[in-house]
Length: 391
Image (cartoon, rainbow, N blue to C red; front, side):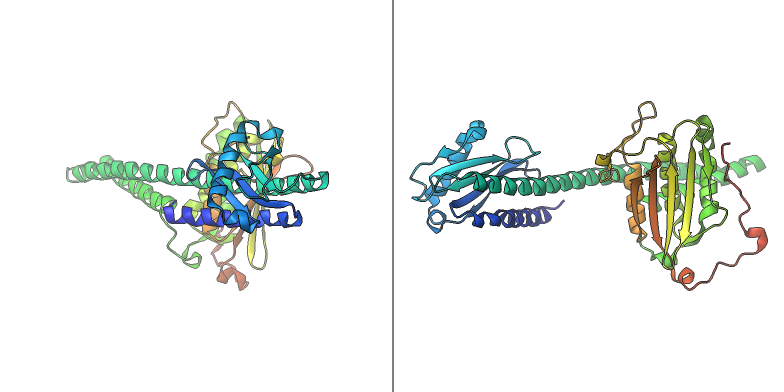
């Protein structure tokens, strides 16, 4: 994250905190607020002040003394209020520390008053503290996600560089081999290697490079055939847990990058297998609407804890059962990235009958929205019936 964007976020945060503090105007005895919170950008604790008393606002020495008083009372902040020195301003007499719920103890809201608060005023102050705490938790969580995403991009960039370097060496060795007399078998192996290397480079560009082509320029993909083909790769895993993979008899068509869509399918299926019980059923469905294609994968099992709903698509988050490899928590984050690049959206929910369901919506292309179906000769239509993949 650039320093300019960090500064912009810091300014926005301070303004939003001051907005949250503005309800304090309903308590006439409060003359100032100070929010002390941890800033993950600078890795330091910061103060955001809202001065309501003009006399206090104009007294720089008083403000400095106020900050020193706050630092001094922090170790015993829960035992306030504290009597203030008259040196701050004649109206500032009491310092009320209020903990911010759900945040470390060093995070506090301090209210400076000209008299002791009555119970209803103290309760109102607590409600303001809860609103500030909720805002700071979301802000700090967002920073954590951004940091993890930046780290992921750095790792992927390093991996891409190393893989491309190795591929370059393979190409060099292939060029040397192709300059030598080879028998038919040797020529076939060399050709296959050259094709494989080209596919690796294409997939690297597709997965790690920016999406430069508009969606309408992408190839038309038979969704059922693609899921069937990818499902075969997972057949050993399905059989190991005696799982059944069910697909619709009808297909749907998407204009999409087949490599990236394959990644989405692989990660969704891998996730479903990991959380399915022995002998369970994984159901894959899709429906075509006027302007969208809805694809859903449903797996039996324990479902997801409510706390996971908002975090599962963030880099580094994983709930993979023990004994199946904890992984890096990147699969669903990659799904989210690919789906968004295609103009779609993805979400997850638990089912009332048990288990969990992942839903992905993709926008249809102009050719599909017009009501036209792709025209293929019978011999090219998919004949694969994979509805009982591992029964």
